[in-house]
Length: 191
Image 1 (cartoon, rainbow, N blue to C red):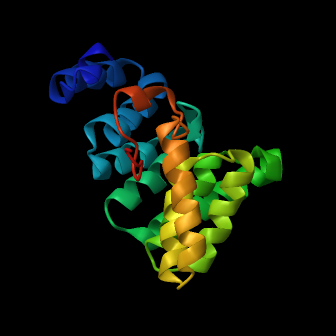
Image 2: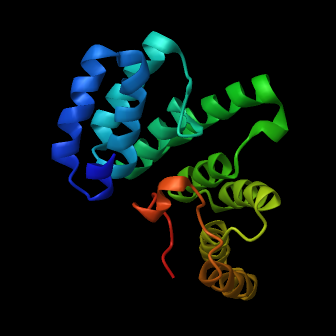
C-alpha cells in the first residue's frame, strides 16, 4: 500500500500480484480495488472483480461490493448503460439482503451518474435526491443535480443548488471514503 500511496502503481502491483498467487481469496479483491481506484486500469479491474464474483460471490472490499466497483469502472470506460445495469443489479441484491436502508449514498450517487451520463436527467435527479437524504450536504451530488436541473431548463433552481454545492464542497462535504486523501474518486468535484 505505501507504494500505491506514492503513486508507484507498477512497482506496487508486482507485490499484490504475488500475494494473489498465494491467497487469491484474500488478495484478488484488494488488487481489483487498487486497479479501480488507484491505478485506474478499469478493464483489468472489471476482469478481476468478475473473477472474484465467479469464485466467491458478490462480496465486499473497502466497504463496497464488487459490483459497485465494476459499475465505477464502466462509468470510467464510458459504458454508461452497462454501469446503470450493474448498479441496478447490485442495489436490488443489497435491498433484498438489508432493506432500503442498506444502500450507501455512493451507490445512489453513482447510479444517478450512470443516468446523468445518458441524458436521463429527471431519473438522475431522483437518485441524487435519495443520496441527499442520506448525506444532505453531499456537494458532489448537489453539483451534478444542479447541472441536471440546468439541462432541464430549471436555471434558477440549478443556480441555488450550485451555490449550496460550492459552499458544502468548500466545507469538505464530499466523497468521504478513506482513500480519498490519496486519490480522487470518479466524478468527485474539487473546489
